Each structure stands twice: as structure tokens, then as C-alpha cells.
Amino acid sequence: MLEFWLCFVPIFVAVDALGTFPVFMNLTEGMKRPAIRKTIIQSTITAMVVGITFLLLGQWILALLRITVSDFMIAGGVLLFVISLNDMIAVEKKVQNVDPESVGAVPIGVPLIVGPAVLTTSLLLVSQYGYILTMIVVILNVIIAGVLFYLSNTINKLLGKPGAKTVSKLACLILASIGVMVVRKGIELFIAKGF
Image 1 (spheres, rainbow, N blue to C red):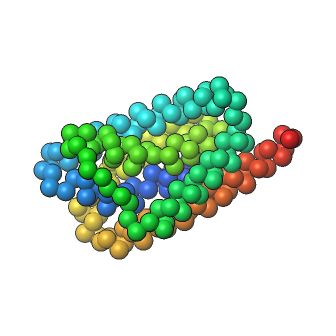
Image 2 (cartoon, one colour):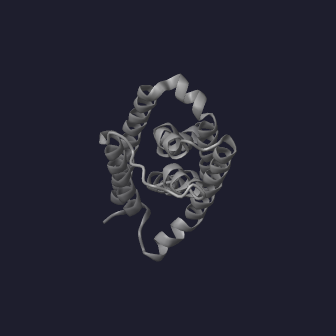
Image 3 (tube, rainbow, N blue to C red):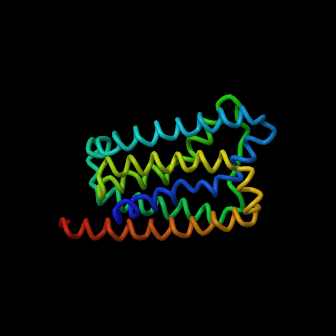
């Protein structure tokens, strides 16, 4: 059970559904409820497909490029730290003009739900917890993001804009800490295997 939570929390933080919440609200503003439901379904399916595909092929690509697990851990940890730092400092996540028909796939599904932080974190977790648990955790977190987006109006009223921003910034801080931990573990693994 502890392994599940150790795997679940980093992906949950990386998905940052509450952080992408204002962006989702902005992108779906003016849409009718059936269109929003369609967008949520499209985004969760896209995010799952991309997340699982990268999870299954990511390590093969690393092996092909002769990148070791410790190399990837160090690079991934630095990337997570930079992404979280960028999100923490940014006033708000940028929104660009998008096509209402494909808004669920891009940018909500990818890169808002499953972006660089989720892809990097999931590959790092595979080496520690295996494919099955990591895949279950990725799927669960994508579903949670979909449910949160479905309940967007209720959550928005409950938290308000300041509350959503506070939760998002806290998630960024946790993600930065996870990034530092991953770099440390990568260096330890590199030293343990010898130069």
C-alpha cells in the first residue's frame, strides 16, 4: 500500500489538475455543457493514450539512445525542478487560441494533463515501481483530472481563484522537492554503479 502512495503522489502533483483548472475554465468558457463533457472525454482519452504509450516506449527509446537510468533520473529531476519553478513564478499559465473541436486533445489532454512533468515522472517511477503500478497510477490520475474538470463549476465556487492558485503553488513546491530528490537518487545510483 505504501508503494502505491509513493508512486501515486508524484504523478498527482505532476498532473496538477487544480493548477490547470483556471486554464480549463478559460478554454471552455462559453461552451455549452454537452460540448464541455465532450471536451473532458476527449482530453482524458488523449492524456491516457499519450501517457501509456510513452510509458511503454520510453525506456526502449532510452536504451536505443544508450541513456542510463541514472542519466535520465538526473536530467528528469532537473527538468521537474525547472518546470515547477517556472509554474511557481509564473503569474498564470498561458493560454493560446485553440480550435474548439480539438481543445480536449490539445492543449487540455496534452500538455495540460499529461505534459513533460508527467512523462518524466512516470518514466522515473517505472524504474522504481514497475510498469503495472505506474500505469495504474497514471490512468487513475488522468481520471481524477477528468472528474475535477467535470466538477469545475462546483470546485471553482468552493475554492475561488485565490484558493486554486494557492493549491497550485503548493503542488509546484512539492514537485520541485521531488525533482531535487530524483536528482539526488540519480547521483547516488551513478556513484554506486561506478564512473
